[in-house]
Length: 199
Image (cartoon, rainbow, N blue to C red):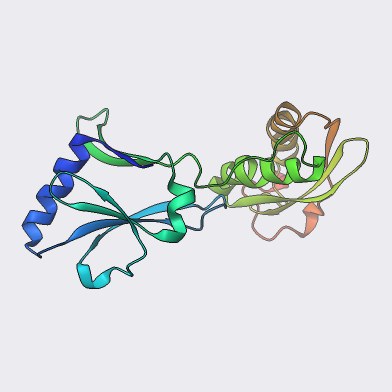
């Protein structure tokens, strides 16, 4: 179910020994599972902190507890300590199912478009304080989007739409024929790059 490397087990065991609390383990749970914000949380767990319905994974010198409502989301997860480019070590958790699974080919065009927008497009736009919302997906595959946040009123919205979002949607969702902007950019409050500054 969850793979925890020997290196990560050694790391946790040393931390737990330092705490000196009998029976202390590590609990892992999914936070906001099934959404683009999904993440995994690791925390020390004393026996009194446990609810009693956790799944227990025996490790070298301690127990890893998986929150019962997180089991499905964390199935196949890997916990490891990796060495970065600068030589430092970092704890990593790879949980391939935590954000949910993309709709299959049998899903509607609308479902597939929403999935790609929420899980691929919006996380990229968030770095500029922006986002898009799907306004409409027509029967002939035309997607109408509304930009918001730092993208509403941004002078680069057209470039983002054509070279980023449209390419992504057309590449990931068969049946999309065009992506169009339905945003009133003149009412944008805090554009990432004001429209008047673009040549």
